[in-house]
Amino acid sequence: MPNPPWLEGYQNYAAMSAEVDGRLGHIVTTDFKRGSGDCGVRQTFRLIDGPGEVLELELLEYREKFDCDGNATDPGRWPVEFRPN
Image 1 (cartoon, rainbow, N blue to C red):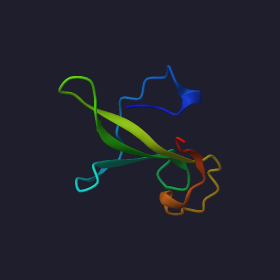
Image 2: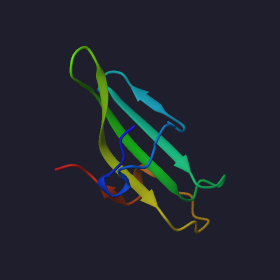
Image 3: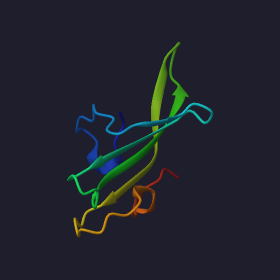
Image 4: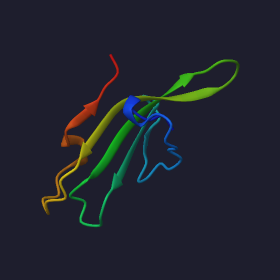
C-alpha cells in the first residue's frame, strides 16, 4: 500500500481496521497507536487501473494524530498531513 512521500521506502503491508466503499472504490484504514483510540494514522486509498490488467491503490489522504492525549476523537477529523495535488 502506498505511503506519503516522506515515508517512501517504508513497507506498508497492513490494512488495519479497513472499511471498503465499493461504490467509490475507496478503502479507508485506521491504525490506532493504542487501544484507547486517541492517536494513530488514518489513510484513504482509491483503486485505479494500473498497467496491463492490474488494479493499484492510490493514496488520497493521510491523517495522523501524534499526541496520545486520552481524547479519543473520530479519526476522520484528525489533522490531514497529506493529500496529493
